[in-house]
Amino acid sequence: MNDRILSFHDSTFHHCEKFVWFVQTDGLVIDYQKQFVRTLLAYAVQRDIPADQLCRSASIDLETLRSGRELDISPKQINDLWLNVGHLSQDTFFGLHLGESMQLTALGIVGELIKTSRSIGEGVTNAAAFGNLLTDVFQMIVDNNSKTFKIRFIPNEQARSEYPETFRQMMDLSLVLTIHELDGLVLKKISPRCASLPLEESQRNEYTRTLRCEVTKSNEYKLEFDAQLWNEPIITANYELQVSLLDFATKELRKNHFPSSLKQRISQYLITHAYLGMPTMEEIASNFNMSARTFQRRLQQEDVTYHEISDGIRRSLALNYLHSGKYQLKEISVMLGYNELSAFARAFKRWTGNSPAKYQQGLSH
Image 1 (cartoon, one colour):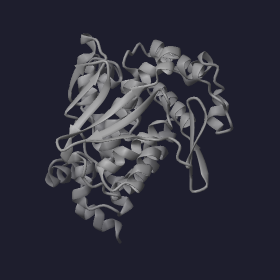
Image 2 (tube, rainbow, N blue to C red; image 1 turned 180 degrees about the vertical axis):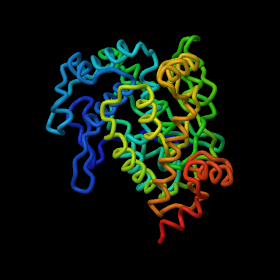
Image 3 (cartoon, helix red, strand yellow; image 1 turned 90 degrees about the horizontal axis):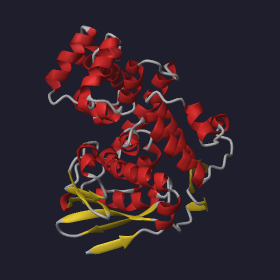
Image 4 (spheres, rainbow, N blue to C red; image 1 turned 30 degrees about the horizontal axis):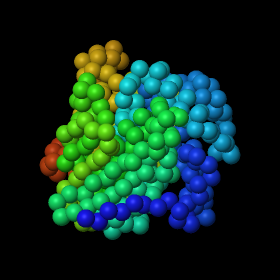
C-alpha cells in the first residue's frame, strides 16, 4: 500500500494565519479563503438569504470583500457565518448543498489540477494540498492499492473543539466537493464505492444522494473509489471548456445580479453547473432545501415548470457552444446531457427552426 501524507510546506503556498491561505500563480496572489467566502455568499443569495445580513451577523465588511481590498477574516467570523447561514436557510445540510454548487466556482482549484496532473491519481494527490487553501480543519491522506484508493479527511481536533460549526460544515462540503473536483477532471459524474462519516440515521438519505454511494456510520471521514479510476487520464481540453463556461456564466449572471424569483435563482444555479449536464428536478429541489412537491408548487406560482427553465438554459448553452466554434456537434450533445445526437438535433430544431448543422454552417458565412 502506498500511504502518502501531503505536506503543506511547498514554497508556492504561504500560510499567513489560521484558515487563511494564498497561492501565487503567474504573478497574481489569489486569496482562496476570501474567494470561498464570496462563493458562500453568492450561494446564500441564490437561496434567498441577503448577503449584507449575513456579513453583518459575522462582522464582515461586505463592500471591502466585494472590492477585493485587503480584508482579514478571523476563524470566529467564519464560524459565525456558518452558524447564521444555517439558521437563516433552515438547512441542516447547507455545507453539502454548497459543495454541490461549487463546480465552476472551484475552477481556480480544478484548473490548477488539470494543468499539473496527468491522471486522476495525480490529481487526487495534488488536490490534497489545495484542500488547505480553503480551510485547515482537516488534513487529507490519500492511499491506494490494487483494488481501491481512499481519501481520508483527518480532523484538526483543535478546530473541531473551538469552531464546531465551521468544522461540521467544512467536512460536509469537502466530501462532496472532492467528488465534484473529480467530475471536473474527466467531465463525467464519478461515484465512490462507499463513504464513511459520523451521521444520524435521519441524515443517511441526503448523504447518499449527494455523495452518490452507500454511506456508513463511522468515526472517520473517508471516500473510497475503484482502483481503475486511479490511472484514468485527465483530458486537458476540459479546462478550456470550463474556462469558456465560466466566462459565459459570468456574463449571464450579471444580467440578474440580484435575483428575486425562484426561476431566476434556479437559472443561475443551472448555468453555473452546466459542464456536467442538467440536474434532475429532485436533485435541485434538495439543493434548495425543498421537497420536489414544494419545489413544483413554488414554480407553478411563477407560471413556469422546471422543464421549461432547464430547456431554456440548454438552448442558451447550445448557442454559446456553436458560436464559440470550438466544439463538434457530438461533443455539444454530450455536454448538454443528450444521450444521442439525434435527440439534441430535434431539440435544437424546436428552439431555432434549423438543424444544428445548418445553423453552424450559417455562422461560417
